[in-house]
Amino acid sequence: MSLGIVRTPQDRAAAIQEAFLRDEQARIRAAIAKVAIFRDLNAQAIDDLARRLSVRRVPGGGAIFAQDEAGDSLYILMAGRVKVVMFGDNGREVTLAVLRAGDIFGEMSLFDGRSRSANVVALEPATTLALGREDLLRHMAAHPQTAMNLLGEMSRRLRRADETIAELALCDVQDRLVKRLVALAHEDAQELPEGMLIRRRPTQQDLANMVGACRETISRTFNSLARKGLIVPRGRSLVVTRRLLAMNAQPARAA
Ligand code: CMP
Image (cartoon, rainbow, N blue to C red):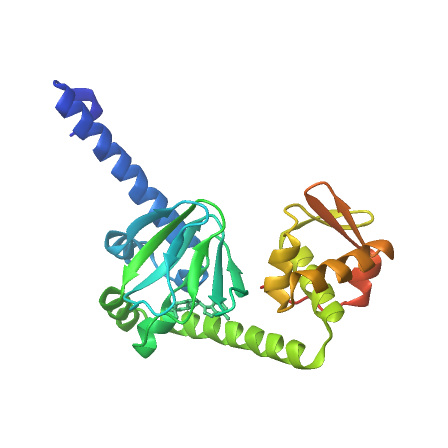
């Protein structure tokens, strides 16, 4: 049905919905084409995937799924940021990763058949595409390069997790905080003459959850770095100075 031949309000509503869905399909295809694990696919394979994906929208602060739920879908993040997080019995939480548009999650329980290994919570309104297990397995059988790309992504995540374990065992809180701030600066910052500007400064509680320390310790360490002029809080943003970047020349990815 085209918008040009509408007669009744019902026709018009149906035409608008059809146009919306057509646009949504185009947006889904464009999003898939940008996802690293699907980067080698031809247009036909992308069309086929797009037909199998369902869109899910989650408000900021909403859970996409909880740890221990059964996992039957792989998710592609189309818009917004989400955190992968575990909660302790004492109410503390640890942020394992912050994922952004183009990232995927939910693959672990699809492959090992166990429940979700962590909670995934939207940090801001987020849009995801969900791909069911059978559809993913069928797609990978037809396109082994996607499986290779996914293995590459899982290896990168394991490497990062190893680095985090090593940091927890070998570095003090200040070193861990410095590494995390430098990683955030390399990921999400604007270059300034005096350093890198992290536009959305994480709260001290967020930083504590990322580096595995309590908020009070992070607050003391953060203030000490600020007094030494190594970081400069600026409204809701934060300058990571060149001096601090030089102290930690190895860029690592943020949580
Ligand atoms: P799954 O176990 O199905 O559900 C939770 C998801 O969080 C998991 O799949 C991964 O996609 C993701 N995840 C778990 N741990 C990490 C991590 N350390 N880094 C990045 N993503 C992770």
